[in-house]
Amino acid sequence: MPVTGAHHTSYTVIDMDVTLKFYRDLLGFEVINERPEVTNNYFRKIIGFPDAVVHATLLRIPGTEHVLELLQYINPKGNPQDLTPNNPGSSHICYIVDDLKSIYSQLVEKGIDFISPPVYLDEGPNVGGWSLYLRDPNGIVIEMMQPSEK
Image 1 (cartoon, rainbow, N blue to C red):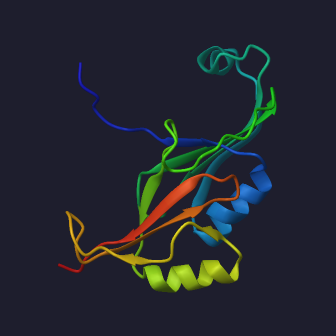
Image 2: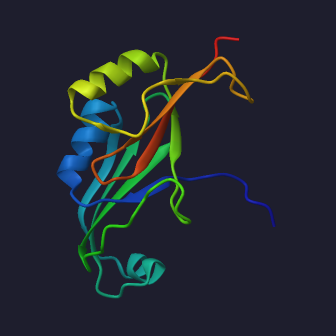
Image 3: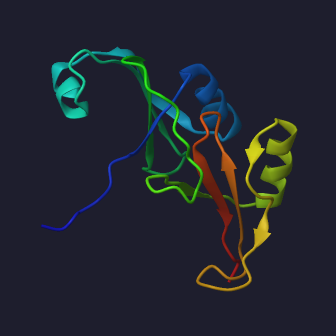
C-alpha cells in the first residue's frame, strides 16, 4: 500500500496575521483559502480535539501545486516547542529560489532570524548550489536552496 502523492505541508502557528506577513508578503505565497473559525466535527475528530476552534489558511507557491496549510489554534491553545534542527520531531521544508544571496540580503533587512548565511554546497548531491536555514516568525525552520546551474 504505497503512498501515491502529497497534498500539503502544515504548520501550527502562533499568530496568523504575523505569519501571513512572512509567507504571503515576504516570500510571495498566494492565499487560496482562509477560514477564520474551523469547527467542523470531522476536523475535530481528525486532530483529536472535540472542542477545537482553528483559524486555517491555505497558501500556494506561485506556479506550483504545493500547498502550505497554516493552522492557528484558538482553542485549545498549544505550547511553543523547541524546534532546534537536531531535536527529534523537528522538521523543515526546503524552498527553491533563483538568487539566494539577494533573498538573504532582503530578508536580513526585514529582521528575519537566520540560522546560517548562504553556504556554498561544495560536495554531495547538490554540489554547486547554495543553501541556508532560517526561522519563520513561529520558530519553524525553513531551508532555502539555490540549485547548481549544472
